[in-house]
Amino acid sequence: MSANSYWPTRSRNSSRGEVGTTEETPLTCAVWEERACFGVCVHFPAFWAALFFAVASLLVPTCASAQARSDLPFDVVLALDNSGSMKKNDPENLMRPAVLTFAARLPQDTRLGIVVFDTISRLALDLSPVSEAGFTEKTQHALERVDYRGQWTDIPGAVERSLYELRQHGRPASRRVLVLFTDGFVDLGDPARNRSRGDWLRSDLISEAKRESVMIFGIAFTEGADFELIQSVSQQTGGAHFRILSASEMAAVFGSVTDRIRQLRAEQAAPVQPIPSPGRPMPASGYTDRGSSIPVKWLAVGLAALAIACGLWLWWARSTAPPVPATLQDCSERAKIYAVDKRTFRVGRVRHKGLRRNDLVVPGKHVSRTHAEIRFRNGDFYIKDDGSVQGTFVNGVKLKPGQVERLKNEDVLRFDRHEFLFGAVVGVAAGGASVVTEPAPDPEDQQPPRRAVLPTPQPAPQTPVVAKPRVATVPPPGYEVGALGVLSGEEPAPAASGSSELNEMCLGCDKGVSSGQMRIWHSYKICGECETNALSLPSGQVDTYVKNLENKRLRRLQTVEKL
Image (cartoon, rainbow, N blue to C red; front, side):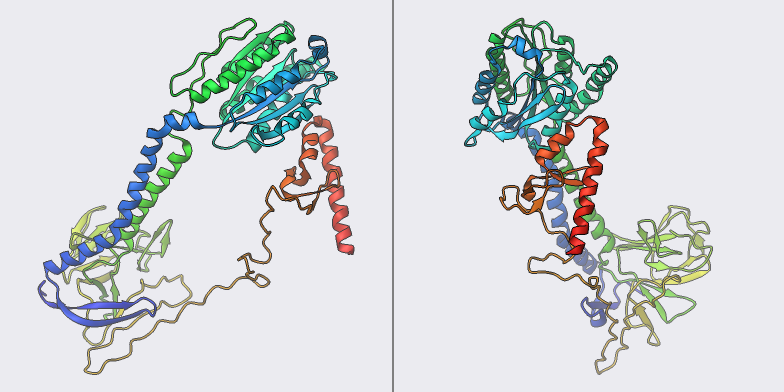
């Protein structure tokens, strides 16, 4: 059969699954190239658009990284020592005016939080914008908790509570700073526990701070402070450490910290040396800007876009029909003709092998799961053996594993004992043979495959066979789509954090609070104040508190059942 023969062109109604013969067109090389170019023009714009977006996502952040670094706002947490020794070292309580001045000098887009620590660590002020109305009054109210009446000094607990606040409520696109102010050592009244807590700070907490990109600025107050610990923590996290000897230097040292924050805000890529303290200046490690590389989120977006682009290309190369029609006719049952309707047509013993899906399933114990592939490339069909055990034969000649062979009309392909006649034509077969438009049936499938039969050419048109439609999937009983598109049975979205409606009851204090003020602690919903108290409990009292919450929850369930 010559290449210039008149071959019928197939048309498909995708909504009805109909296959029919519409017209006869001479299949010349020019027609092949015209159809192939049309397929490329239709599908490749989406591929090139996705590829362009992927490259732009990787390059744009690099060009704009210096400007982005200088525009990041700050989230700052002050950890203030409230132990009894502070009352002796700061009898006039100069800490309060120094902190107020520190907060007033921060950039307007900064958020500030305060943690007060002695035996336990308490969140006195959650992260709040310094520019909001009433911020000064909130800060003054928080500083009223600094009364210097604590018994012990738990520095690791203060660092952990500050890191938790930054991690949970800090802004993702912000620089995070922890300012640690103390006049003592890690002292919890037990030498063994002191060593354990100190090791925890030097290993786990410092690693967490570096992982979360939190800079720690340590201020050692008086000669009694653990300056070695303060210096180590600050240096490993890229911050700076200071040392002052009297309370009169508090305002100056907090001013130095503010200047350093502003300096970090204005710097570009070059590292900056720390500003010496107003007391006794000590050398400190410079801060290396971590924003010089491509942000992780932009890198992820770029890689995702690149993966989408590659996926589009692979989908087009795999799923679209070749512009030249082709068939495989079963030599044992001449009435069965399978349409090669994909650019990559796969043959194997089973329907699925991992992520691979075979289009023609050939039963037989000697047929490999991934036996062969028929590919359409540059106007021709090729067959490739996929490393099958028994091999793939073309006109009686066995192909080597991975060998690619160009196919011609009336080539005989053999997979184990099964032979198929290849033809680059889908037309009217002699004797009214049918063309199977779906893949060959899988022996393990319970349902018979759908088929659409080509009508034999007659003067009067015939109605083609319509495949039986699939049964639509319905939602489970009891689920209905509401006015807002939410299935009944799904939990509604939580209320906005700014809502003032008291619509939930805290398990800890039995007070009604809004949904935005609730926290999840050990799988129980409690308010923010109860969460702060729970986090401050010693480890021996946590289990007791959890049991109390569970008992309250069970009593509430019993009350609801009675109602």
